[in-house]
Image (cartoon, rainbow, N blue to C red; front, top):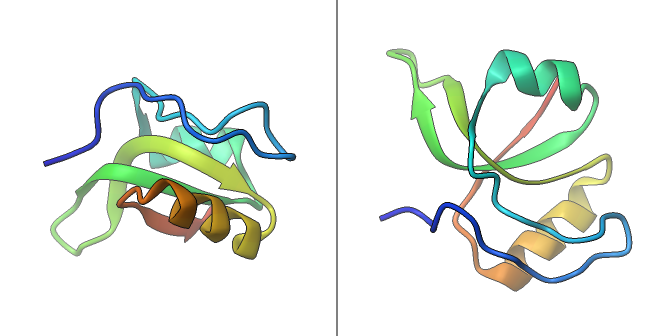
Length: 84
């Protein structure tokens, strides 16, 4: 069971709020928008090799520790990856 399509979460100093994206984002779109950042995705779709193809963007940050702290506070179930 995944997260609701849109939920408001705790405010953070780096972003106005952490919110689950209602639209599924492809890895290509994430690479254009968040290159060099860590992203937290929920409800991921994987290819036959297990690589992420798309997911709902929950949060992003250049600092992995900060991202993980915010995700931990929300108790969200996410996959975190570095966008190259």
